[in-house]
Image (cartoon, rainbow, N blue to C red; front, side):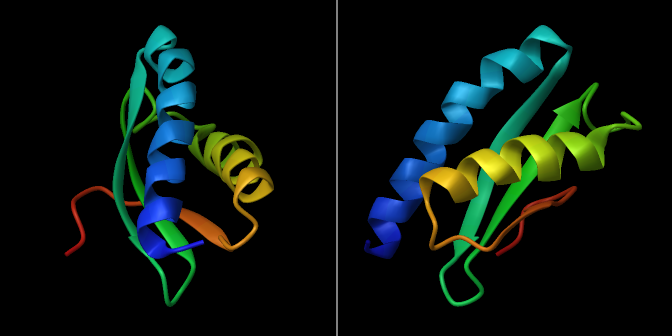
Amino acid sequence: MKKEEIELKIIQLIDKIRPFLINDGGNINFIKYDHKEKTVYVSLSGACKDCAMIDITLKDGIEEMIINEIPEIKEVRNIDEEVS
């Protein structure tokens, strides 16, 4: 898949996850996809930002789902602010 196709698929997957996080007072935003590192950068906010379970939500939930759907991706990282 091309980088643009992967980014579109990532955004579609995040849009599927978002309602569940919003329901718990949180949110997720796509920041960028690093094609060379095969890493997705997201920003978890709201209740998710300070939740003690953030690592479990990120790795066992969000990352697992994205990697299952897009095997080219190796990691999903949460960041507090935008990466350029």
